[in-house]
Length: 450
Ligand code: TRP
Image (tube, rainbow, N blue to C red; front, side):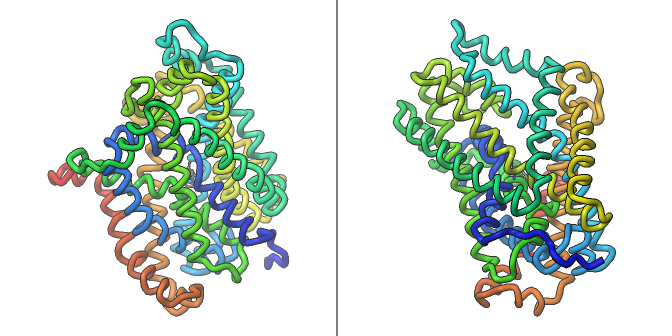
């Protein structure tokens, strides 16, 4: 059935803000700083910038292009542009949306708990050793885990049910400026701290000796996750976009905003870490265990901590709505469901799918999907290590090898931009993704190339 009036963004600015909202998330403020810490700083940052430019932005352009030409959810758009077989890539994308959102919401819930903890002054303790332990206690509290997971999913549903212009666009226009304002306030304060020089040096002084093969692959993989690529989120957002918008320009702005915000998050976190003599390489716990120690010792730490966790919550929310939108667009376009039915129904399903993740640190900690890995970690591994790269590979292949070159060229304003982009999406991106996949499966290690 032809849809006469598809909901759409009210302006190019609205689209760019929403797409940047999708891109900027826990990946930027939680994961980017901690992997930068683990992989040693400056050199890793350089490789990451290269991956964003050579692989991330070209695939971002491809996804928006497919959505804008297809005017449908990932399954419908890929069927229309690539044929029935390629619509499988869309199916995989919708499935990935379910998986990622189910555990993303659990982590987003942690940021809400920590915002409340900060206001309540929970980090003002006698001995700072109590702070890392606090995180463990919280993870072990099944009821609190479920409460925050449910609260966050309810927020996501409430926004998505409003539709593209009145839900997604309107809320991104509130969340994104607020996020940027908070980030700037925190940045000014952290750059004036004692550890500022050390923090800046850590992020920008490139020591290539620290760079392992694994760091290259991590940088490449993260460039996908941070730009919301590989499951049709940007494709879906592109399907609501007017053909008048300059695709390349929009994608470059989104990529630059995402990168600047990740770098700014690092520049908020590392100066604080060094000011208080903490370790930058503590991994996933950097935000929830290491940083609150600094919050407890710094002047005005309570406000700083509150703003920081609100920043994280806002970033998570504007990303989570893009994940749910992919699923909703599929049920609306392909199954003819109403938006409220799709949003509430699938939001509830995703909540339930997230329950074992929320409980995987307490009552379900002995339940393993993969040997030795919690349910939560299993889903994260499955989605980011396999589903997203495979989806991204599909997008790159259908664009570079299946859709006619002439049709692609029509979507570009500047011929020069097309000439740069085409070989990147046709050759460079697929090769890069295949290398990531071989690594994840362990083939490279087996061949001794890791
Ligand atoms: N990009 C978001 C982040 O950095 C996460 C995200 C939102 C995402 N939508 C996505 C990741 C779609 C992959 C695919 O946190």
